[in-house]
Structure formats: structure tokens, C-alpha cells
Image (cartoon, rainbow, N blue to C red):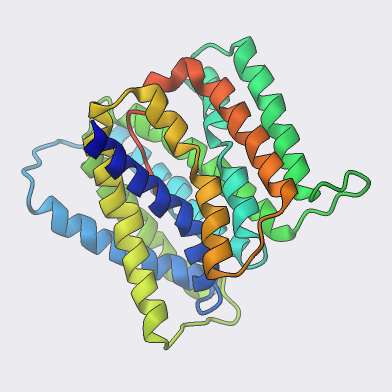
Length: 299
């Protein structure tokens, strides 16, 4: 049990740090090019992993269409908007906004999966929104200025929620590796032309440390950490694991302080408490569904 919690904590640290690593990477690579390159290394890792497993899953037309949709929306747009947003958005604020994804997922599940919207969800949503407002305004309620990058982070959050719903539907027939592999292949293929269309100018770093960070985060964040989470989540209580995953914004704060020398403000701490509290309150009744499987395709 202790070993499982240690591995889950490692995953949370990796995912929380990804916001700061992404902020560093967009200084050397343009967003669409960074998306294409990152998906390339993710696909290479997943293809290598798939060779070690026997997969006799038959894909039907509906599965192919769903995987195409998932690859475009949940992988390519999710990844690209994440990096586009981090060009100007603060990584801690971005982490806090993305922390509200389970709430949006709950509402989308109510629409498409006919799941019930509860009073707890509504109250938790209001609490989380108050936290976001507090962080975005930096505690200054007299004026509101929203960085344009944060709008792209909101797109990242929306596409992430869509991805969770889509993978939940697909997982009724397909195994997680098949879903992840094919959706990332689609995302990579779509990213190739857009890397030359969306970026003006195209920026590619020649710094070895940037390439090491790019490859390392692609493989560890979206490959190794996801596998570790899914392999260890079975050994712990789902509600405790869900709460543990909500610590990502705090990890982003600490990582930003260490790597970017970005001070942690009181507004961020209070906002984080409201947001995490709202998310926990909203998702408590669906803990067994949302905590068991972790899909980190778009950060």
C-alpha cells in the first residue's frame, strides 16, 4: 500500500511539473512544431510498447470514427492549445484552470452519458469558479484582465474533458493501449501539416537540453507516468487517489518557484484551495469512475 501511494505521488509530481516544463519548452519551440515533435516521441514510445503485447482487437467503423475524433480533438488540439497558451499564460494559473476538468467532465457525462447532476456538483462548481476568479484577478477584485494564453488553456481543459468522455465510451470495447496508440497516431499525422501552417515563424531549438527535456517529458509524462498510475490505482482507495491527483496545482507552484524563480502568491494559494475544494466536492460522488483510469494526453 505504501509503495503504491509512493508511485502515485510520483505521477502527480510528474504531471504537475509538466506545466513548468511546457513553459520552458515554448521558449525554444513554436507551439505547433512542439506539438508535432512531442507526439512523434509519444507515438514511438507507444509503438515500442505495443510490440510487447498481443493485440487482437478488431476495429469497427464506429471505433475508427471515434478514434479519428479523439485524435483530432483530444490529442492534437489539446496538445497544441496547451503549448499555445503557455507562451503567455502563467503555468500555475494554467494548472489551476485545468484542475477543474473533472467538473466539466461531470457535466458532459450528464449530457452524453445520462449521468446525474447533483446539488454537490453545482455547489462545488461555484466554489471552483470563485477560486479561478481569485487567481485570474490576482486577488484584485476591482479589475479583471485575462491573459490571452489563458483562453487557450480553457480550450485545453474543454478538449481534455471531451477526451475523458470519449475514452470512457471507447474503453467499453477497446483496451487502453489501443485507444492511446491510435488516437496519438491520428494526432501526430494531423500535427504534421499544421506545424508549418500555424507557426509563424517556425522555431526549433538547437539546445541539447531542450531536446532532452522534450523527449523526456513526452515519454515520461504521457507514457511512463500514465502506465504507473493505471498499474497502482488498483491497490489504493479510489477517493484518496482522486484527492492525491488534485495536488497537481501545488506541485506546479513549487516547481515554478524552483525552476522559474516564480514566487508563490497568497492569491494563488487561496485560489488553489477554493479550486481543489470545489473539485473534490463536485467529484466525490463519481470518485470510483473518474479516479480509476488516468488519461494524460493534452498537458
